[in-house]
Image 1 (tube, rainbow, N blue to C red):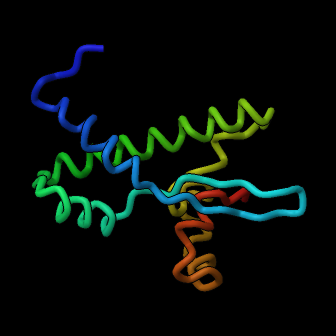
Image 2: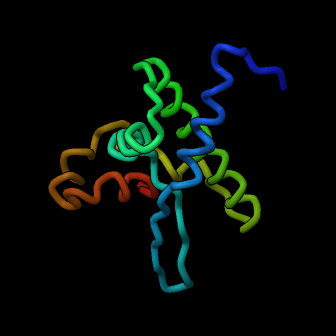
Length: 123
């Protein structure tokens, strides 16, 4: 795949950020699963501080879009390997699955864990 020379650095930056990605482990009766957490603004800020890179707002939004697509692909691969049937119901952002209808209710219930909860919300 030929990349635009003006944006090809984003692949390197995303790879660097992705290498330090955190995973959320969810234990269940039948075992456990791990899911990649979205790249947070704090993680991106730390990466900026550590590397000296100075991404523009557009580059940051592009990195976040790459992250969302990567997590969807990860869920599809994991679901395919495990024989699952609903990869689209995993790894979504806050309010994506419920269309935002239950975000405030869930925020009261889960507080700071809302991002993790929404990432794997089945309903």
